[in-house]
Length: 116
Length: 112
Image 1 (spheres, rainbow over the protein chains, first blue to last red):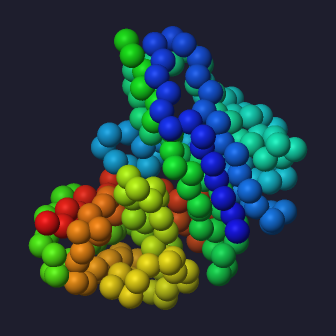
Image 2 (cartoon, each protein chain N blue to C red; image 1 turned 180 degrees about the vertical axis):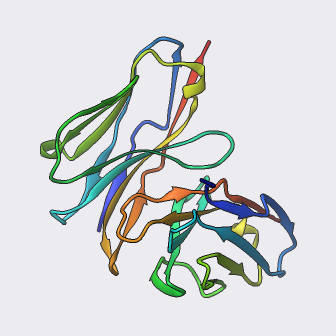
Image 3 (tube, chains in turn blue, red; image 1 turned 45 degrees about the horizontal axis):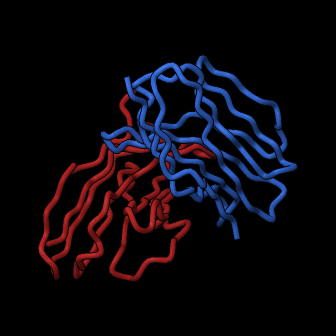
């Protein structure tokens, strides 16, 4: 069975600090997808990034970067120079094929609080 | 392009009642999934509909049911409400063949 672990329940930083959110996953499939979502107080889950199991290239998008390492089954997310608007709960998710579709299993989330 | 729309945003119901939640997917998206989010259990998958057929189902009791209409809009119904059903219910839609899902803002259900 697939499993996603986000060991950090809550992280508190001061604005402009860099912060890394950890994600470790378990799966028996060779083909799978990993995601990060952001959930602001409004409740909506905002899609940030998708990675497939065959693409271990790191990705950078503005202040956000992701490090995917199959050897350690990790898909970590770094925010550089954090801002107050980054305060949210961040979810890592893993999808395998189920019944002809990809259904994500979510981690428990990491609450990031950025203080001014 | 409009996002996923869920109505109502907030609901208060009494134990034993039933409730229906609605979800309108992004235009052109035919897959709709429902999730329950609680502090204790996190985000849990309820079910997925595609072309008016339930394609996948999570591990929830039969009190939780859903359906999808020909325009891809979906409804979720919970009968005989229990206090433990209090949660944020999130709906997500996907394009055919896509992997990533796009979520609505959710319906916050409180059972008293």
